[in-house]
Image (cartoon, rainbow, N blue to C red; front, side):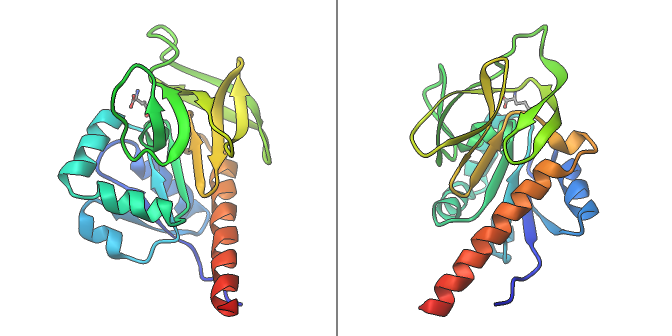
Length: 205
Ligand code: GLN
């Protein structure tokens, strides 16, 4: 069984995508930017949805004709990692808003959830499977509720800030702006496990 090197797509229509690319490249992982629909045709082992402004990114995904393809890819098992606005894009429900975006992760998020004064702050907390990590929050959301099957990975002050649902990892903070690569490594492990499972399924088919 041969597992290929991971080739990770980073949504690059708006927001903090460069930081993710640099972090992945520092881990020796190949990345490519997704700016237009045709970029989604490249072989992709995982997808990163960066922080930024979820309303702008959501609108651009529709305008650029990428929304349905991205949703289908995630629904058929593509590993995806959303940070901050990226988590909001993944959430099935957004508190006090009528619409959602990609909506593949069965969680409800609350945007700009820490108020204006505390818009940005830095802390440290445990993340399941990793240990204590630095967490930088920038006008961050939190996960207000999750449905069955969602695994809570981290909480800060009783609020969920990281969770996983099958092939989807959503976190409210920004590991790409710190020097700590462990959350990205956690995602890469998810990618490899899913690749491994796919290969085994192909071999036994
Ligand atoms: N406040 C932004 C939003 O609602 C998210 C902020 C971020 O990604 N740093 O989309």
